[in-house]
Image (cartoon, rainbow, N blue to C red; front, side, top):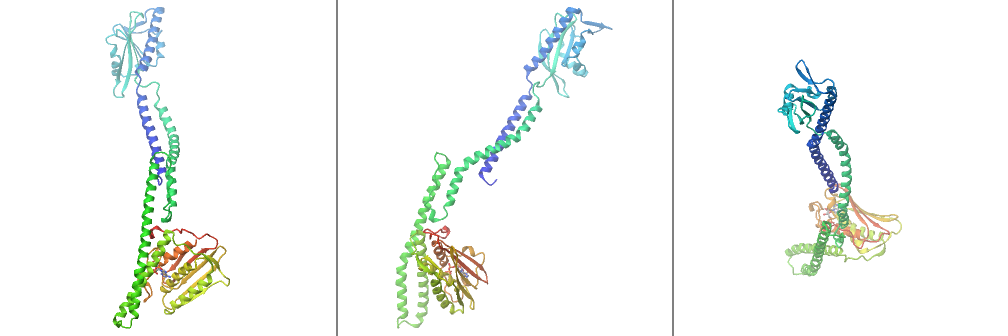
Length: 493
Ligand code: ADP
C-alpha cells in the first residue's frame, strides 16, 4: 500500500463490503422474524376449511362422532380427510373431550399436547389467536387459532389449528447464498470503482508532483505550478506551493546577491592588504625576523583572494551573470599549455607530466579562459594529491559527437565515501592527505570546474581507487548548445 490511491481503494472496498455485510445481517435478522399476519392468515384458512368440511359432512351424514367402547372419536368416514392436513389440528367436543388430532399433533409428547390444547379449556366463544411454546427444550413455539365450531352437530365443540412460529416465506439459506455469491462481485466492483475514483481524485496531485519534480534547483525556482480551477483543496495546495516557491526564490536570490556583494566588497581591501604586505616584504629596512611572518601573511592573503575570486565566479554563475565568451579553439593548444604548467608544478615533487593528444586539430567553440581554468584546477589537484615519483597524464580524445578530456594521476585517490561530495562547495577531504608542503585548497576548485563543464553543455565524472589514483573525465559536446543556465545543486548554494 505505497500509494494514496491504493490505500483509498482498499478503504473504499472495505467500507462497501462492511456496509453490505451490516445491511445483510440486519436484513437477515429482520426477515427471520415471523410475520404474525401471515401466520394468522394461514391458520385461519385452515380453520375455515376444516369448519366448512365439518358442517357439510354433518349436513350429509348427520352425527359426526362415533362412540366406540365409550370413547368418542371422529367418524372414520371423514377423519381421512383431515389426515392430509399438515398443520396441528385438534378437534374437541362440547365438553372439551378430544375428538381428533392431526398427524403432527399426534407426534407431540403428552406434556406438549397438554400445553397445545390448554387454550381449548374452556371452550372458546369466538375465534382467538395466540402463541404457545409447547416444547420449551426444543423451543417449539406454535401460533394457533381456536374457534368454536357451530352447525356441525351437537358433538363438535371447537377446533384448534396451529403452525410453527417462524417465517413462512423466508428461506435464510437463499439470502446467505445470494450474499456469498454476490460478495466477491461486489468486492471486485467496489475495488475497480474505488481505484478509478481514487485515481480521478489524485490526478491533480500527480500533476503537482510532476511539476514540482521539474523544479530541481535554484535556477528553476522561478517556475510556478498550474493551479487547477475550482475551489477545492488542490487549488489551495497549488496556491500554497506557489507562495512557498516565491518565498524560496526570493531567499535564494538574496543569498546569491549577498555572496556576490560580499565577495565583491572584499576584493579591494584584500588587494590593498596584499600590496601593503608585498611592499613591506621588499622594503630593505624590514627586520629579518618579521619577514617570515609577513611571508605567511601573504600566503594567507593570497589564498583568501583566490577564495573570494572563486566565490564571486560561482555567485555570478548562479545569478546567470557569468556569460561564456565562446570562440573556436584547438583544444590541443590549451592542453599543451596546461601540461607545461603542471610539469613545472610537479617538477619539485619529482612527478612526470605527460600528454596524449590526437594528431589532428580538435576544434571546438569554447570559452578558452574558462576551459584553461577547468584544466588547471584538475591538473593542480592531480599534482597536489600525487606523491613523489608519480605520474600525471592529460588526455584528449576526439569523438564523433563529443570531445573527451581526461586528467589521470597515480596519486592517493579518493575514498568511495568521499566521491559523491567532491564537487560540493567548500568540501575538502582530510587536508592532512595532501602532499606535505602543499598549500591547503579552498574546496571550491571542483565546484567551479563542474560549473564550467556544464556551462559548455558538458559533464564531468570521476573514478578513483584509494592508493592507486584518480581519473577526471570531462565530456564536451561538439554540437550541443552550451547551457546558458547550467543545472546546479541547491545544497551547494
Ligand atoms: P581543494 O582546493 O581542496 O583542492 P577541490 O574542490 O579542488 O578543493 O577538491 C576537493 C577535494 O577533492 C580535495 O580536497 C581533495 O580531497 C579531493 N581531490 C580533488 N582532486 C583529487 C585528486 N586528483 N586526487 C585525490 N583527491 C582529490
